[in-house]
Image (cartoon, rainbow, N blue to C red; front, side, top):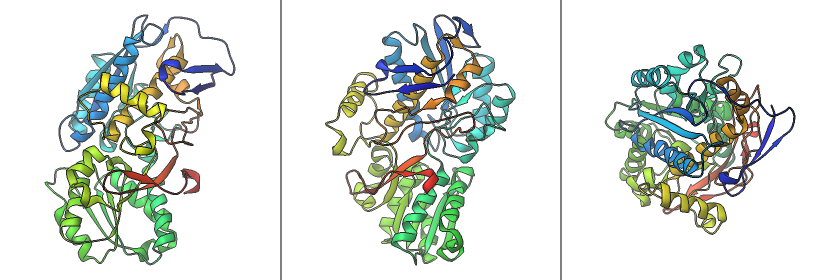
Length: 406
């Protein structure tokens, strides 16, 4: 069933237009769904090296609390079961098995981390459990032929890296590039995308690369080595803890490369502030959300609605943290899919509706960026815009760039 979903100011007023077909027969349920409840499973790193991301799970829980207070999804309350996996794949496997086999959820939503999701992808697909809107930008989540029960949400890391490569070629054609990356599929996707974007100049322009493990105490030595390798451009593909360390170390040793910071770690509250705001001035990143620290959005109805939700339902979170916007927007997307399911809350229909999103406009996405999927396209967001940190906020520049053009 093809559904057009429009979200203008509020998800409480979503309008659905059914393009074809009749309404589903009432009361078709899969595991975890019924007349009064929809069980949604999730894992988040509430502890461990990626604990800065824990606010995402808390924000999603806060959004679902608001939906439940408003009456739920067709009078069904969302039971959001979110467990800590510490950003450890073995722990993710353990927690997900409990969520599926003991808690009996309808679907997994927003499980976070490339290595963590890689560890559970086979299990969930073998058992035909939706692994929906994965919190990772790895390309592997867009593989409906081989993994029809797994779908990403955020822009691809490789697309983002190609955007940086194109900008480097335009502004610094003789750059000497160093790359700091996490030693797993997350970090390696950025290396792949950077090489793709640089094309036949990749071997010439990339002069050094250094990886880190999430068990490392710091990345200080890697940063020093990249400087010693002669790089005047730095791409940091790291989770928040190590991104903040890299920003601080680059500044403290007096190195002044053109610094690119991946979007998964460009939160003002969670990364730039801990690093030292003055130490991040001039860093370039890419975004697809309205950053809550950017004054240009703060008089808009969308921002005011988000802020009101923050104050009422998510008051313990930092309003400068873009990860709250991420959780808010992800939860809105899932609510749109569940509403489109109507009374057919089977796992099969959840995936069918998730693969039928057309021009979904979320209030806190940047203007011009929409969510789209199809049966052979499980990459919902494909557009980004470059931005530069000025010591207080990220300032957008250039145009919204489509993944197909990057």
